[in-house]
Image (cartoon, rainbow, N blue to C red; front, side, top):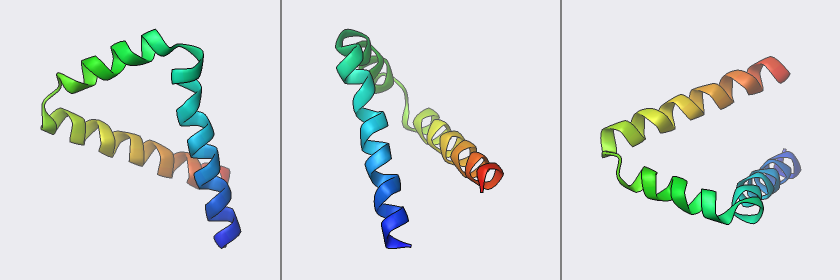
Amino acid sequence: MWRDLGTALCLVLVIEGMLPFLSPRGWKSGVRQLLELDERTLRAMGLGIMLLGAGLLYLIR
């Protein structure tokens, strides 16, 4: 189980690093737009992303 968790975390790091590596200017622009959002909107986006991830994990497993 710990090995699977470690693998998943490593994949998250690889995926998170792809955008700044491939398009640093676009990534910076996106971060600026996120900084302008209010906390409620960011929380809703975070919840939506978590639910999407959990749903996809359920379908895959």
